[in-house]
Image (cartoon, rainbow, N blue to C red; front, top):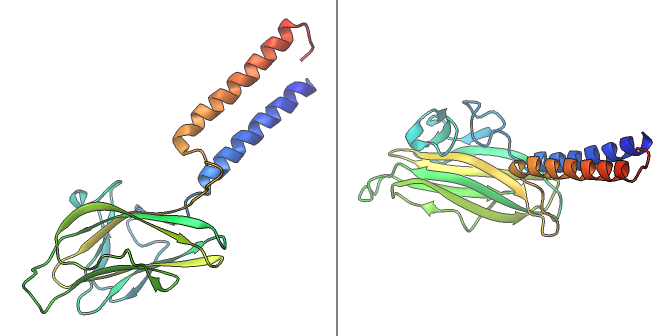
Length: 207
């Protein structure tokens, strides 16, 4: 009986570690804006035309996406992430632009990302071109225990739309099981335990 309990405990420990690793991988709160608002985010700058809405044509997944149409100056959203110094991370998100008239010199359409106050070179900058939801990814290394992430917008004529913001740690040595692979892991571990138990009984050993 003690051997069975020991093996069951080991199985639970391994499964728990896998579940914990997968659960802790995501750092962004309300990255898909499914709270129907900016919960977890703080707004800054010109925010009169920033909102969350359920618009299927401008949403990557789920029911909601965030819209940004700051006029005359920039505005956006920010969030503080709990990070590990020296750890590499990948920021991923889906972004689109309703577009603006390129011949109208009196208006601007601008987007950028700042990490710890530093604008990322991969930011799109000034762009009036209409675009559908497109996937983007930026890698960065955390310099402190708290990393400030900011999305900065201006769109005088229409709106940018943002969805599925995610920040995940990059582990070069150990792959954390994705949620979809956890059932397979648990099934394999359960099968191993069953086989071990059957062999013990066949050999006449006591469980």
